Image: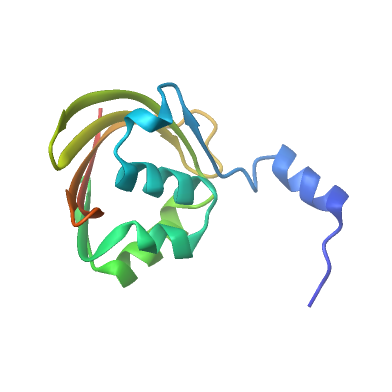
Length: 135
């Protein structure tokens, strides 16, 4: 296994190669636990805790693309989410098992990012469905 110097790692972070994070402009405690679980795990690019946020039969609708099941969700997160930056801007609406947020997401390599509505549906304390749409 190759060793990577600390200085090299800091260089990667500085140029945005390693920059996963989640920032909250609202109180994190105000966000339902399963959604907060997702953003915290995604912000750390940590697959094991991210998988634990989802129901085994979970589905994500990413604009018009359907991502079904924990294995497909894991691949999606590794390919498209990890390394990006989330900013949670506001709670748009909240009901018993549904939460809609306005977020800003900057995928790895994109400094500006875009705003989107993330609607979460929960079952048994886990995410059963996420609908991601441009704002």
